Image 1 (spheres, rainbow, N blue to C red):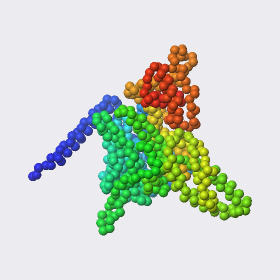
Image 2: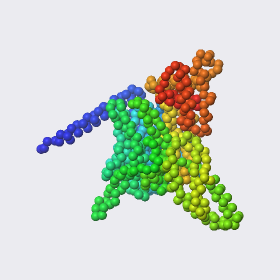
Image 3: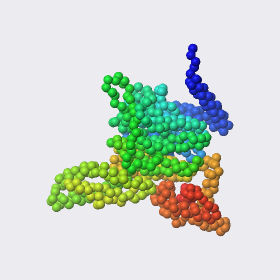
Image 4: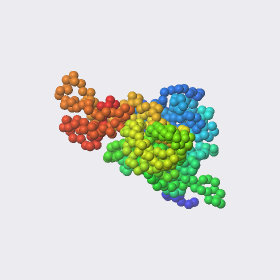
Length: 611
């Protein structure tokens, strides 16, 4: 009998050691939780599932819009004028809420329904959902994560669920060979297959990012781990993963990953590369029926977005995608991060890998009125009749379409200035003189005050009948995480203006500081209290005369625009708030760093605005 392979034996020994260490850590964790009076997370999930089993029947009822949430899924019903929302999370500062509720938004009625279906998936966020027209309509959900209220426990799912839309029935698909447990992954449907890519797993002791890709056959209910040729994306989560169904291709862009440099020191990376997964053509004479796939890097062109992750994407007609928002973490040192959030809208030509910053065009009422006046003038002068001129106007409209690419090229060259919530945009719209083919940009230039949703990441996007819908998301104000429940729509073809379906309402926000804040956070709270005292100065307070800091007021602060988010307002007026912050510190005879000055300026701005 031959000797055992030493390397193989060593590998198995290491694997056994890791398993033992994992079990010991789990046992120790459960003991700690029991001492704190918190239930084991798997027991919590089992209780949720038992509650769902007791529902017994399907119930649909009208309801208010969903609560604030991020990392929820929003998809279009494949047959009805409906959007379906599932799950998501909401953090209040000291409690995490994770949902498994199902909502249906009826587009024509502008109404929400809460749909209660027995035996559904347990609560989760950062999962993925897609809809297909297969077998009367289905919504598929894979993976995601669940967190206890205290966030001391995390659980990553690897389960696959399908909601049969016609019968309103949940079914868990227990097919072997699928992806490991994860969240932050991406999933799309191409023809009769689901594709799952990337994501991460974190158990509070260690983490791992993935770049594997799986396909799931919707007819045979089988998983396949793909092994594409070529060099593909590195491990990542939170990336853009968008299909080109007609071409059997999928585009991957960006994302985020971390790596451990040493104990308790991690380095985050925001990716900006792009790849396309494409099906290779079957060679003549080969008998292999399984399709072959390959990765190809994509050379990006156009006015590319700055690095960011957490962008949301929606596929639109013509092999184009619209992308909104995102965040970029600027590392000031090993312990401090400054997160920059975005509310830019980008258009991506998936065939060419070409980016275009979207600037809203506004309604074309002025252009339409000009054409109407010209049409009447020509008819009254007897030069051309109405019918002929109408025909020429139609020809002019066709020429407008031809000129659209030229407009986008102009937009591409322009810098994508960050939007300030509600801002003023000057858009040069080329118009066509009927029958002449000439362009008159000067007469059609419009100054339009356009509304723009506030900055955020992990918002939910869906497209139905050429209209893109956007719900919720999250951003930060200092140490606070603000979770949104606002709701908007925009014509994905015209890109003229955002329609507000549910306005952003800060009164819905609840934030309670955690009991175990570190010393820096406590110091921040102290300075915020001092800033609040400066704002809410009471002339009858006996201490006012002796406290010079009370004399600093904000009566001369720049006006805040209607509907403007606090973050956008601060960005627009931060010079004022930085000066006030500096005055407060100078009165106390203290020095302050530029980074701390900016942070304190945000705090006093927030207090002054009543947040």
